[in-house]
Image (tube, rainbow, N blue to C red):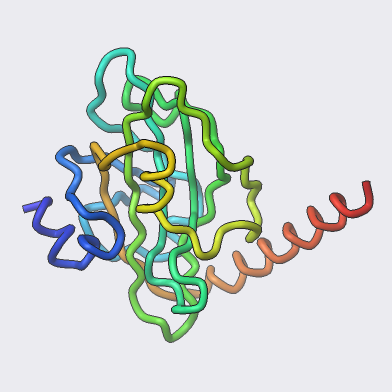
Amino acid sequence: MASSKWAELGVIPDVIDVAPPLRAEVIYPSGVSCDFGNELTPTQVKDKPHITFPSEEGALYTIIMTDWDASEMVREVHHFMMVDVSNGDSKTGTVHSEYIGSGAPEGTGLHRYCFLIYKQPPGFKPAEPYRPRNRERRYKFCLKRYAAENDLGDPVAGNFFQAQYDDWVPKQKAELEAATTTQNFQFYSQ
């Protein structure tokens, strides 16, 4: 049933080409969790979740969260990344892109937010720099291209939810704009 949801809701072929064989458990501090396309609210998913998944002993993994349903102009939006996750538990990895919750603009309907877990090849290092919690370098992300360029292969585990606009979205947008402006000011004033 879970594997068919990836195709039924168009995650295959939009976001990934092959359904991950394993389920990732994604549980938010608000108490809600992903369940292969269930609808959650931006308010419920505003804080970074705890993610667990079946893993191989000694292997390291990368977790990526993406929203493929942003506007045609920005297309896929990168929301979160952890690298060097071991033992199938996000408490063990290193954050490489700070978490940003769902932020579907008003009137854009449901967006699909996907958590995908990739087994890292030996010697894996992300090809791009760390992303702080702001809007810089988040738009026009392409998960398929990123996975190919970094030899990650197909995802080994995953899960996803859907969300649309609620009253948390403008608050998050204001936070992110302020963070982007502040960080750009700090960068240019150094």
